[in-house]
Image 1 (cartoon, rainbow, N blue to C red):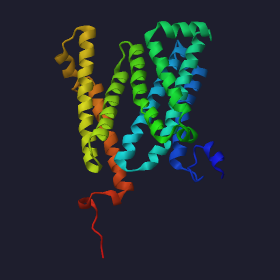
Image 2: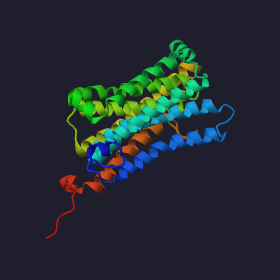
Image 3: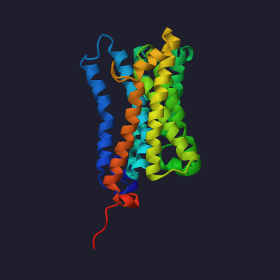
Image 4: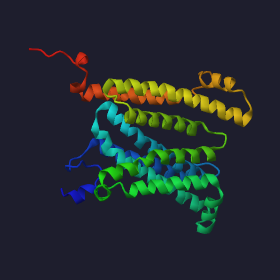
Length: 296
């Protein structure tokens, strides 16, 4: 199979063979969109179906963006390079859902482009969301192998580091439009803090292997605590409730898991899954003390 044909078959690996990981990812990326489309067509999205579809498409755009960001630590902690193969695919899906989000918003405004532009200019949360959309568009446009060669690997990597900034901007947009229901955007702030902490750890400290996994687990706990403190501060400023009172609820499970514990649980789960994959797929990379003794 020619390289040009392989480029248009995302379920194939670079050698032209069927990749189960690529195939599963490719199919999975369509599922939320098909679900939104079906529910919109069948009238299952409530009294304001278009508003619900706008919300869901934006929600999946930012979810896929965060999944693409977590693939880097998953790859490094598991010592399994194959996960990087689908990062581009997931990032492109995030961009597609973001443009679908904008398209549905334009449909809600009866495709009155002047009104859409006016709303974006005059509403700060829409302006922030549009900035994130432009950023995602730029990263998607430069995600091809041809653009990597044209820009050069170093410049391309510098450009695509903006994915973290775009994640922050998108989360701010999500937080501002969520009003009082801020649980999921708060979780995303916490996960972004963990991802940035992990990146800084890799950048400034020489930590590899099991030491990196331990540091990532410690960062998960710190990110969870920072999320709980941030949520307590937010509700203190918003409602006047004392921070210790909010914090005691946030760190308990009486009212269900709050964003702080959930952030720690999600990040720790990622580390555990990565280590399990490392043990299962890369036994040769185990520390010498943990390797099974050879016989004979």
